[in-house]
Length: 334
Image (cartoon, rainbow, N blue to C red; front, side, top):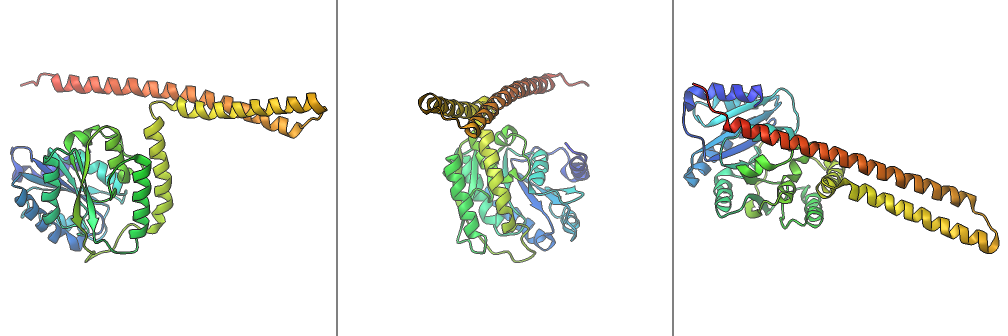
């Protein structure tokens, strides 16, 4: 656990004492949302009370410069279940998610934005109910959404559904998880917060969705614009590649290499036919075929190296798993 997270919980020790672990954890990333913090926490409190389950809130302040963290910390006396974790600078939503997932302690983990485009008092009970019905992951589906990003979002969601065969309408909105799902996710990189549903589904977890109401932002401004569309497109390709070939890289590199070598062979047969039939040479085409053959062989070699890397990664993962088991089974001293 990072020092910042550990310090946040230490500050709460007098209020929290030795109370039992919460059943529901609400994780909220926030960047320059000072005006939304107080109404957000009030709505979260109402939502947790409606569930009838013991809860906590982990608010990750991602380098805000408007006093968001200070406003949240000032409310810890009113809300003793609130933990505030600070990033020294703005590191992005994916890093805030990594920090929040390390800090939460509940069995059910809910991801909500701080901008109040969702209302936690309405959505927390919906997400919890769907998780209790047997889903491992639940995605919110925005209803009556308006604004300039609706068209781009619809394209992203349509492409993602087709590419990942995931029957969810809204990939990048509020979510609920069982703790086991969070612990099973691979390390999040870059802007991979958009692909948590895909990563969870690839691990075999059951993904459901629930309709939720969208509300226009009343304070602050959006931190996400249309300029992220090209980056998202590239990230989609990377995630799809990793989910498909991460365990078997030779299938990708070896397949491409085989295609190039076969193409070079076909060109060679054609050039041999021309030479034997009419005595004609095509030297540039012959050189091109040679380049294709060399490129194919290089791809084969890259595939072998990638397989070695995967093999070493598997061994490291197995060693880490064994170390975790040893730590869990180690007898506690006096």
